[in-house]
Every structure is written in structure tokens, then in C-alpha cells.
Image (cartoon, rainbow, N blue to C red; front, side, top):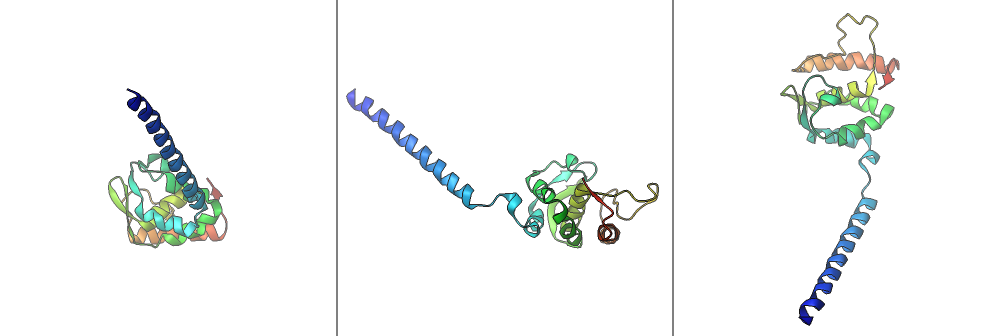
Length: 162
């Protein structure tokens, strides 16, 4: 009986030691690994290739069913993300993101991120402004036209941050 009772406290001590070692290891790793928000914007944008999820209705993040950690980190960069997202719109890389089930290229995902980051109201709201893509699929020509339209707006700083 004494052997069993003396072994039990030892196993609790060993368990406590393991918990302490794991906690210290996690704290050291967390301290040495920069937070996602601290990553350069180009790295965050490039990482959008690995994003998975579907935009169920429009391209607002509220209709996206995937993890929002990476998109939120991109959007948190604010104005510094605008030009890199605009340039990314030409990228044909495949992603794990869909819009109503239709696959999106990295350029189209960057378009979606840009639309979630900045707002612009064209002078004639009833006209079909090429900067707004309203439904999938997003063709290369529609994306190029949207990029040109947004470039005009961005160069003249005619937008606001969302």
C-alpha cells in the first residue's frame, strides 16, 4: 500500500513537470515566431494561395465560410495593402477559394480582398463600372478591366478605407 501511495504523488509531479515544460516551450515559440499581422504584406498576399473556403453570395468576407485569420491580417494592413493587392490582381495562381462554387485565381482573391478593404462610389451608380465584378466566373478580361478601373481610382486616391 505504501508503494502505491508514494508512486501516485510522483506521477502527479511528473505530469506537472511535463505541463511546465510544454508551457515554456510554447511561450518561447510564440515569442520567437512573429504574429501574422507582423508579416510583410507581400508574404501575406502570397499566402492567400493556400486559403480555402467559399464566398456563398457576394465577395464580402461576411459570406466567406473559410478561416478569416489570414484575410483579416491582410485587411489590418490598411492603406499599405492597397497597391500590393491591386498588383496581385494579375496573378493567375490557383487557390482553394471559390465563389458560389466557382474556383477563384489568386488575382480574383486579391480583388475580393481589395473590395473588402477600400470603398469607392462611381459618379454614376447606375452605370456598369468595370471595377465591380458582380458574379462568377471571373474571367481574365474582367479581372484586367477591374484592375485598370481600380488603378485609376487608387492613383487619384479617390477611395476610402472600409
